[in-house]
Structure formats: structure tokens, C-alpha cells
Length: 124
Image (cartoon, rainbow, N blue to C red; front, top):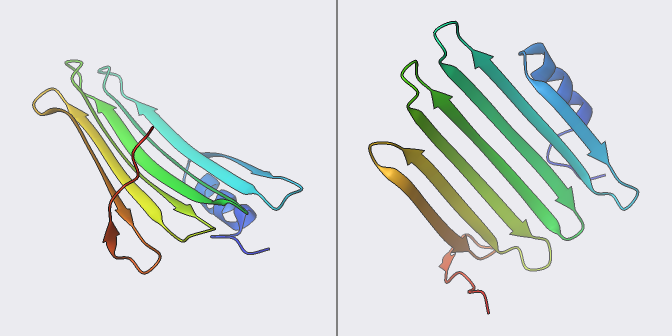
């Protein structure tokens, strides 16, 4: 089976680094792995990081991000994701971030199978 990484290998490596993991495989050759790690400090601050990879005959998606809260309760967050169509090879890459200083920011860029920038499709 053609996979981004062996789910077993990836899960074992991340477990060794203190991440929680879950993995799944379906009869239709679809597979997915999710990882995450959260740490809370005595002062109330916290940090979380997570990501996932999923692949099927329709395409693939991968996403990773982190969030944190300082001792005063200020939150920051960032996540990046990429989805790729198996049929066309086209992909969309998104990035979202939040902080009290900059507010919410989001971007999305689309690419064809060769990596050239293309217009992103719009919803009807």
C-alpha cells in the first residue's frame, strides 16, 4: 500500500516522544494517523501540539498546529493544512492563526499538480 509513512512506524516514533497517537486503516485502502501532546504547567499556562495525516483513493490531507495559553490567560493558535486531490493532483494549502495582538488571520492558496499557483475554486 502506498502511504505517506508507515502508520505503525510513525505512531511508535511519536509515542516515544511523549505524543498520544491513534491510527486507522480501512478496507478501501484509506489510512489515517493523528498525534497530539498537551502540557499544563503549575502556573496555569498550557501548550498543545497536534497533527494528522489521512489518505484514501480520493486524495490526502495533512494538518499540524499548536496552541498555547500563558499564565495570564492569553491564547495564541496556529494551524496549517494541505489537501490534495488524487484525481487532479491539485492542492489547497491553508494557514490560520490567532493571537490577542493580531486577531484572527487566514490564508488559502491553491496549486496545480505541477506546483504552479492557480485560482482557488469558490463555493456555489
